[in-house]
Length: 226
Image 1: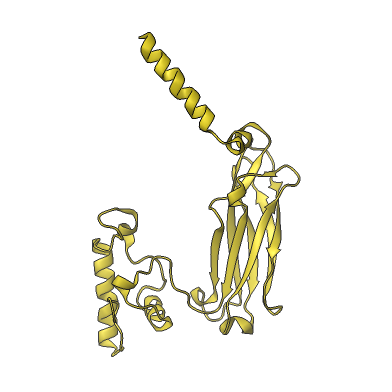
Image 2: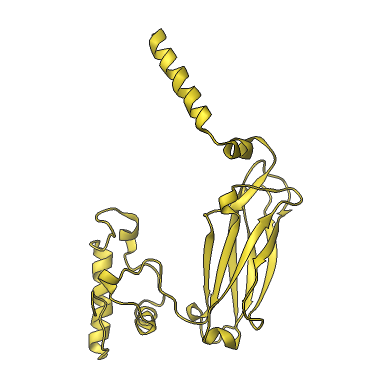
């Protein structure tokens, strides 16, 4: 029994020694704030909105470690790297962690401008220590927002299954499904194969897309090499 206890003590000591100073500081000091992902990337494409919509409202989430409060708390987010084209128009609004919550967000109001039809612009934001919050995980303090009025290749797109990406194919996604959500459906969260393209949702949705292409005489298919 003593032998087992010694093993447990040694193991626990090793685990504590393996904790980085940043991790320990994060949980033992004041309220810390960070973006949910490392170098968060947000896509803001007006192509996902009705043609008559001229404003895109993006909500960028943050999370915190520390104590909740009985009041809304403002946090500070600044522009780290600004837009390339002065015509691109956006406004930061309402960076707040609501009362009794450990999650918050800031809103970005983007205006549709003519330059976005032919070019894609980006803005990078960074969280700053101020007021009731200090910055948390150093790897999660930046967020880049991609602003465009063009279709962009979805993260889930896999050329071996969908063929080479094109804006024409992207238009078909919206025509058939009304969105460009992951066509793998339930397969996007299972592990039946490396990319989950064998899931019934993926197979059925590819069939629907290719049926539409065939019926409308389109010169491409959602398949490898087509």
